[in-house]
Amino acid sequence: MFLEKEEEKILDGEYGEVMEKCMKILVKLGDIYGADKLIDIKSVHSPGASYRVSGDAGLNFVEEVSKKAEFKCFTTLNTGGMDLENWKEHNIPEYFAEKQLRLTRAYEKMGAISCHTCTPYFIGNLPLENEDIAWGESSAICFANSVLKARTNREGGPSALAAGVIGKVPNYGYHRDENRKGDFLFKINTEVKTVREFGALGYYVGKIVGRKVPVFEKLRNTNLDNLKALSAALASSGAVSLFLMKKEESLERIEVDKKDLKEVYEKFGDKGKPDIICIGCPHSSILEIKEIASILKGKKLDAECYILTSKPIKSLSDRMKYTEIIEKAGGKIVCDTCPILTAKESMNYDLLYTNSAKLAHYAPGVCDIDVSLLELKDCLVVK
Ligand code: F3S
Image (cartoon, rainbow, N blue to C red; front, top):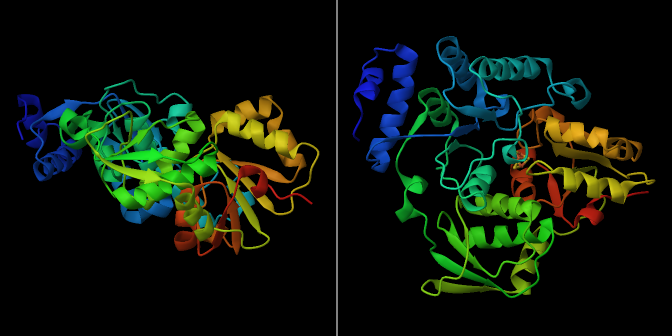
């Protein structure tokens, strides 16, 4: 991979050991994937932000880097291991909280915005079309590439950190035009209009295409919430990082019928009374919280209920009194975290209701819990 003089100097250690280490990560990736050069990036969304995932090795690495370096571009933090303010309410062990706070503080020291959300595009990390970025978190990557039309590969914790510190990424994969083309054309023959339905569609298509690029012909009822559900599910059952929405006659055509989505609903069917309800995977928008509040107004929930979102969206929800309605019904709005990334000890339940295909896919393995994938109003069981 070609390096400019300044980049060579960093690699040779002239700007210190930490910069050298970060540059080595980028050069190694560039060499593996056949990049021709490094390119500037506009933003980073860092996935290594939960202590559950980083462990002590990740925490030590971030702390070490934070003593000597800062992020060169706008950097936001993905979902963390606990609600930073209210963690004591959620059975988070003290040791975990202490390490999560250390991890968050180290990132802040480098200039990252500690928003701890998987929907950074709702709160200001909103790249423009064709901008090169270095994002982690599979649902956000797929959304950024496909809906925002920005350009990112699937960055992991160390590579996103290195990209932020150097301000560049190796030019390969989805940064290049030739890799942003469709592989299969999907024709949808059944109506898809809710978050659960878009999630089921993504789950079904992701299994078929794996890491390839699906193209959707005539995808109707698209809005931000439905497209975030589609992005998250495509990236869960498969490893999709980009989908396209257009007509491409030259591709192999695959029809999706009602019975195909029914298979997904049957896999995660209604299994009885839940002891926990989780909405907001990926993290809820203010419109989703508004809808939840309108369903719950004047009612009492029949199970523990957590609405997951970011702190700024919760502030809006507080102002709009949606939080008050949800809390009166017995629900809680939880910020900064989710069942998959929180401390294991805090997820001690048997059956979870959700409208998220992504959460339905991961929760059984990660949290050892049964899941039913239902429409939002059916998830919110009331007395
Ligand atoms: Fe976000 Fe956690 Fe789901 S990071 S996409 S809420 S698994």
